[in-house]
Amino acid sequence: MKQITVFLSTILLLISCSTQSTDPVETSAEIQTFQAPVADNELLRFAIIGDLTGGERQGVFNVGAESIYAMKPDFIMSIGDLIEGGTKDIVQMDKEWQAFNSKLNNRDIAFYPTVGNHDISNTTMRKWYEETIGPRYYHFVFKNALFLVLDSEDFSHDFFSELQMKRDEAIKVYKKDPNDFPYTEYAQMDQRKFGEISDRQTDYFKTVINDNKDVRWTFLFMHKPVWQDGKKKNFKKLEQALKGNNYTVFNGHVHSYKYTKRLGQDYIQIATTGGEMNARDGINMDHIMWVGLKGNTPSYLNIKLNGMADKTGKAPADGDKLCLNADGCN
Image 1: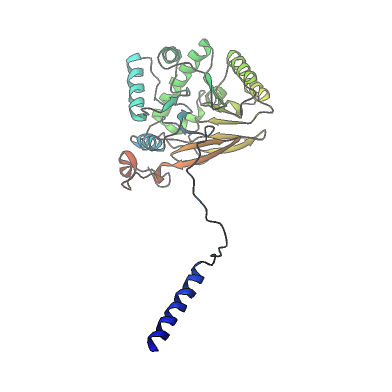
Image 2: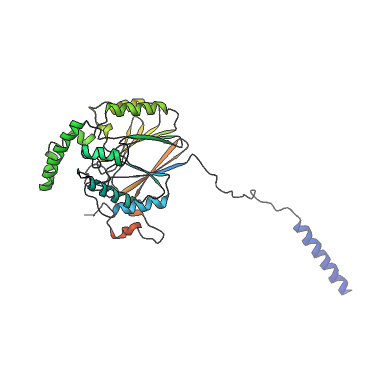
């Protein structure tokens, strides 16, 4: 009798367990499945490097160059002054550009230069640049975005020669006493501060803008801030041609970072990526600018070189041996 009772108890327990296991499990939400990311063929990403000259601090640009390569942008842009220049010696020009290319070490990432006053310091350098490096001003379209690269040193042959003589005189003064440089004729010239674009260059870009009205964004690059020159009207003609379009303007030359909202658009002055830090107006910093464009909305991020670290935790290109912070650096 005892055995039968145990047997019946076991059967009832099994039935009870079986009944409980078939009841549906209540959950607060459906189980989600993670999918692989979808490729975005319209996503555009590029890096911008700043001034290297005016007294390049050796090794700093290498940190930026190696960091950019690790980030794998679609391409690299510049805002000019990539070599020290100031020479008519073609061998020296070749040497300086080879040195820059070696430091850039962009390998399979395309690079697009903007010409600066150090890159074409005189008519000899200008001719050499056009024959060796490429056009002084140009444009291209990539992923339905328009890129306009201007020459802010677009002076006549005669004026360029005059400018060179005044520049050479000012450099002699600077070497004797830097405090006297601001009082030289060259230092006070509008062309030294803002540069110039010719009628021919203006007409070229007006045509390009009108032929590409359907792009989702336009990016303009120049070395000197020609847009700040209230006396010259050529850049205002380009702004008029761009009316109704979305665009961003980048410039360098001043060696400090500054952001301006103008005509409802972003005007961004890039600082240095190894050049001399001497500006009193704006932010002194060594950096690269990272630009992204997704849909019709651009994004901008300034990345300071003193924040870079490779997979070992050290700054790229032996950057730990350098002073990469504007505060307290000599």
